[in-house]
Amino acid sequence: VVSTMQTGGLVGLAALDGSKMTTIEDCKVEGGSVVGQAGGGGTGYETGGLAGRVEGSLVNKSLSTATVNGLDRVGGLVGASATGSELRACGAVSTVNGNTELGGLAGCSEGLVYGCRFGGYLYGGAGNYIGGLVGYLGAGSILGGSAIASVSGGSFVGGLVGYGQAGAGPIHQSYALANIQASGTTAGGLVGHCAVAVYDSWGKGVVQGGTTIGGLVGNL
Image (cartoon, rainbow, N blue to C red; front, side, top):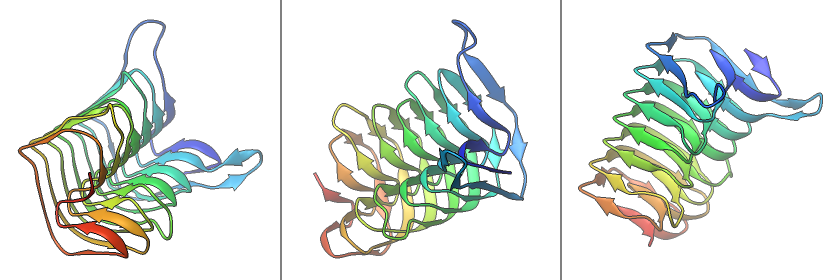
């Protein structure tokens, strides 16, 4: 699958059906590749193994093993999960390549992530906001999330979350087993930059970077 904006192995954009939540359940994208690239007026924005973007939608018990290549907001399962969306009992096993807001499950999440997991490799180049599960946690929360991954990027790199914005969270009962390489600043075994509450969670692995590096959190 190749497109220039909101590219997904199953669906490009899943949005509210009037006032009803759209549901994607028991779906699997197996193998192959999903590519979001610039061109034709598109910017390669929001690329995911299952869906490019979900808005007011429930993704439940779904999995992607597709290789994902994009530019900004790139995830192994979804590129972006907007406010009001829920990712439940989902997973991705993949190699994910991108630039900014890159995550094993979701590049950017503003909804609920519950009982989701990622296993694989994340290559963010010199880009920022790179996380083993979620690259940029904007307004949502993570409960029971996990990542077993190799994660590389520029700045704000974390084993589970690259950047947790104030007002988001909490991150609860979650963990990361990750080797992390940041070419810039602010990297942590669990969270790179953390302005959210974290409970009963842990990170383990090797964390390497320039400045502001922590075994659990790079910057509080």
